[in-house]
Length: 113
Length: 310
Image 1 (tube, rainbow over the protein chains, first blue to last red):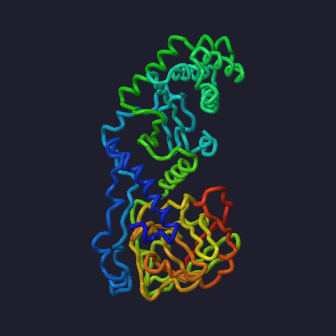
Image 2 (image 1 turned 45 degrees about the vertical axis):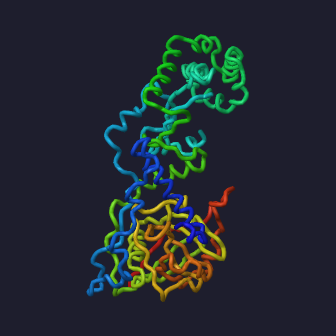
Image 3 (image 1 turned 180 degrees about the vertical axis):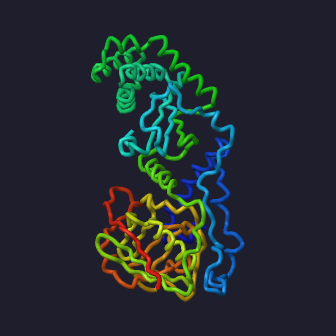
């Protein structure tokens, strides 16, 4: 499926991007689901997408009544209730740098050796 | 970590010991050394020394390693006597041991074990990959939680002016050919989505691509819409405005403008406009290819996209 688009390299990178998101989203489900993609991202177009050119779906008033053909990309599903307790939030035993208000938190379990 | 310095407001780094004492003979000692330095306010400095000079100490015996650590503490300007006393202090040993036991109880499989915003991350840990994730997570805050409302009228004509520092590029939009793409573009332009956004991928003779505020080439507005392919409007000339995608019906906010005819794109990319003025501005955009590795020039930015409805 990707091969036919390989003549346009931006596409490959965008596809990679989705993989990145998939990796992120998949992790939401816990370790056992690391390879499971989220349904929103993999789902194929809704039935409306197989319809004729978009102009055919337009209302006679020359106004688009509804934007059939657009779907939301939910970048991350809601985590399950048990996941947080498995991986504790920062404690006073941790070493932390960066503001609490940061958008991104990296937590690393690390061994110097 | 350099990323911490590059994103001081956006990134928080939490370090959690997980010394694999059963297979690493100096893991506990190393952790204790970082803690002992931490008691003098220099945890991260010792952290950097331990990782940075890994090959210098990894083959040492535990006894020699201890001496090596004391030398480093002196180099860091620590109170050496205090460092030596703290290195094997009961509380210190207990803390490191507790960290190991906690990790084991949770079932942390090994190190490094990495979480991003509390979620397990198993992807690559190099600078560029992690930076891409930071940029995308930052963009997430700006993404829309609904598909765009209908903002265009099909009985009107639409013109978009891409203002850049090198001049304006004027584009006639094709609402009848690609109403979804035009509607989204007009919506995003009016929301200021394109303001300050980079032409991140500029390949002379082919396309100039923009529309991703994360500047990674991986970002989008939070929604995706279908391809709108017309057999009558094809990539047969320069100045075609097309939607970038990551496969069929994955159009978001990234768009490209062709420098030339590009028939190899026909059928796979929505065309939703045509440059009617300012092709020479487009030609002046700084070539840039972030996907080939190596450095990339800063590039050119869209200052603003204004929409004219006639």
